[in-house]
Image 1 (cartoon, rainbow, N blue to C red):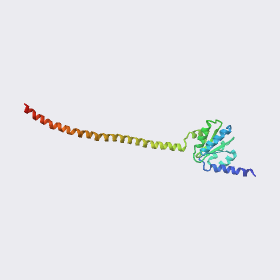
Image 2: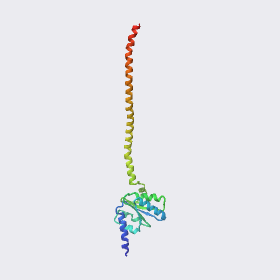
Image 3: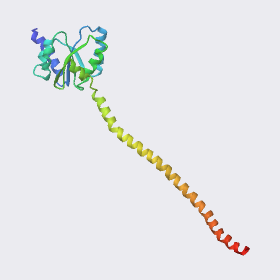
Image 4: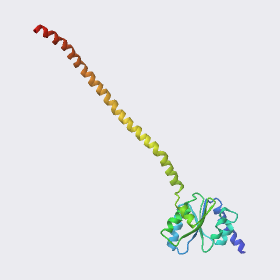
Length: 199
C-alpha cells in the first residue's frame, strides 16, 4: 500500500474533526506520565473536547486552506491537538488548568474562532469563563434587580399590612372613648346649673 493511501484516511479524519471546530489548540505533551496522559484525556473528553496525537505532516495537510493553517509554524516536535466544536475557550481552559499540576504539558498555540494566539495569548484565553458560566452570571445580574425590587415590595406590603391592622384598632378606641366624652359634656351643664342654686 502506498504511503499516500495510508496518509489519506488520517488527513481526512483530522479534516473532519476541524471542519466545524470553534477552536484548535496544539500542545507539547512530552514528559507526561501514562497516568497523567490518561487523566488529561479523561478531563478533555468530559468537556466535549477531541484530543489526539497526530504526525505534524498529517496536521499540516489537513490544516491547509482552513483557518487553522496559521498553526503550521508551530508544528514542530511531538504535537497533540485539542479540538472543540461547542465551546471555543474550553480546550485552553482545561489544558491550562491541567498544566498547573503537570508542568511538562505545554500549550504551543491555538486558533480560537478564526484568530491565532501564541502560548501567552492562549493563557489569556484560558482565563475566560465558559459560555455556561457567562450566561449564569448574566442571568444573575438580570435577576438581581428583580429580586431586590420584589423584596422591597414585600417589605412595603408587610409594613402597609401592619399599618392597616393598627388603623382599625385606633378607630375602635376612638369610637369607644367618644360616648365617655359625650357623657362628660352632658354632665358639665348640669353641674353648672346646680351651682347657682346652692348659692
